[in-house]
Image (cartoon, rainbow, N blue to C red; front, side, top):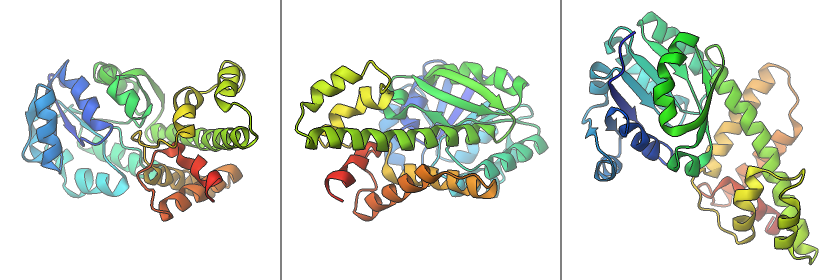
Length: 290
């Protein structure tokens, strides 16, 4: 396989912006974003280069990392453009988009056809995880390709795990989102219950935060949820998109997910109320103002 020296990064959103920054500390890095304002902002903070045309990254880089919005974005960038056919033999493509298992498998087949390595590798950890280089990455693909990608993944993650074959990274992210959705709703109900019951909910959180109810969400979001602060990067509209992917796979495999179905409808309601960009912890708002 090609030795990795130059890495291209496409997608400077909430997550991609700091991830590309960490990458630039270890590799010769070039970035591309459709909104050039973000690319200009990035180059003022980090060392690297801005690519005027995303296709140039595929032609010139030893590895390309993508962090996009959804299946449609991936299809337009990686499939319809036919850029994978322009990559160096043995080059590496890592995709951190949270997308469907279907498009991940399609990209694995296309990468194999073009003799490049591909990993579907969605991330978890939110904006703070990306900023601090502490993401968790769930990887689907071949062991040899994963081994080659480790120095890249190490740049912005605290943990990355090869969970299985192509597409399994996306399925692992769905498992993560299913668990998270129920947890956020449970925490929302608990905090609202405590506050409306008249107890000192701050002290209650302090009391239970080291017990069985402890979670990352409680440690990092309980206080802000009680203060009606919902500006932390991972938006309701993105969570809703992710949960719909989970529901689609569940239907195809005849899996009952009653809690997930309920929480997805709640996120849908928040979006309809005009809060698509609020953080996912804003579920508590629906208990206070149904």
